[in-house]
Image (cartoon, rainbow, N blue to C red; front, side, top):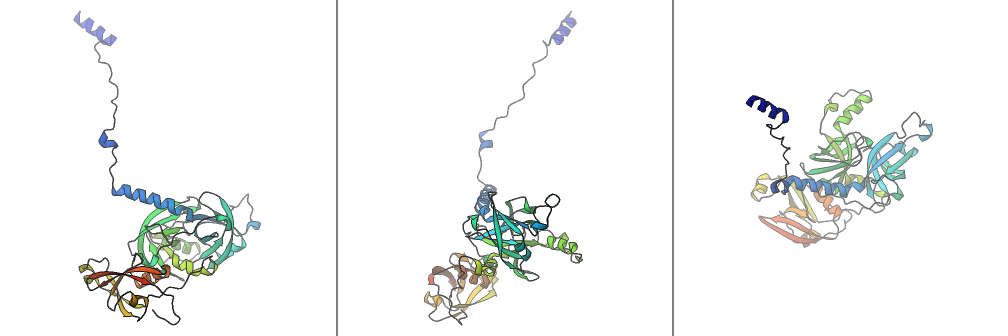
Length: 366
């Protein structure tokens, strides 16, 4: 009897406990709380940099011979590359051949609108062309100091890989300076990738200032040799993370005669500077780097002399920009105008002074 009743309970489900529902996991206060972190700050900064720089990046479409092309069987565009807006009036710099001026050129703005453009000038040493799309309607970008970037400086890249992945962001650093590729000199070497279509993209510093134009990569150079029938004896096509960019000051000087604003000559500071290796002294004074910029001559009555600078002083900064080389000094002076602040070291004492820069005097070396 007991066995029969037990079997009956099992059949009717009386002795079986009801199935339990899946537990609902509710986030605890600890789980939903977002703790400030370095990664979060980096993410926010990269987002802001992308938003600020994006309008300066454009896409360039070039049809070298539109009349000879059959649109049913051939792609509409022969070249899809990146370009950088550099001056009001629709001036854009991009990689491309001189022959592009004989074809059809279009500039695609960040919002997708397309504008016709014409070729204004070309530089064969760097393989860059200057285009003008008057209706582009963008404002002048902010330029930085590429000569003042050190190896290890952050490099923000913005480009259009393969001509279609518009506005792609890359984060890298300056891996080398003063590199040469054929006739192209004083290039920045970057760890940022430069894929097909990236050429002509912009390079900015961590402040969001334009410092360079993407040119090519070692890998692309290797593949170009192979496609042209030459032998890649150095194995460049296997390279990784070796890319090159043209400093923006070189680009501006190359095309300055066409730009709506003229580049004034570098103002005069009135000193002669020697760059020398001085790691022990700099470490003892708590200064970064290993090279010092020592003042070896001060022109009497010049801007530096009036500001109180003397022979033997170590120049540290001008106009808020830390100085890392004599090229950096020249570049900062080129962009700084009028009255500015100068920081220098005398012995172990850091000093500040206001200096009134002067126009270059013909025949002057300082």
